[in-house]
Image (cartoon, rainbow, N blue to C red; front, side, top):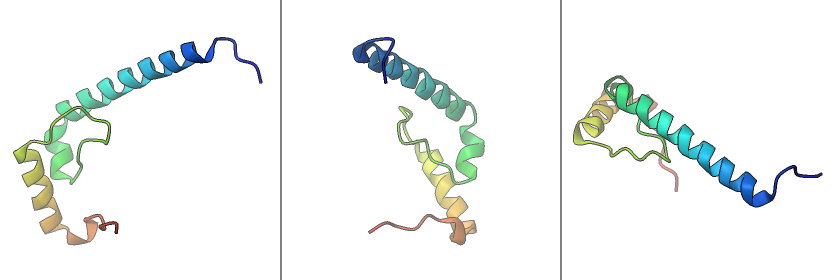
Length: 75
């Protein structure tokens, strides 16, 4: 297997791509946070968005109304 570009360049481009992807996902979450939080969705793992008190309250209320949809705790 041969690489057209040095691995360092590939890694930098992959990192830049991930940064753009995370930025786009964060914008989506910011624009649709009300709908996502009322459906029990938290910001994704790599998100740079803070989980606000309202967001957490909406998620908790969702799980109170839908206890079977609460994720199981991992031991």
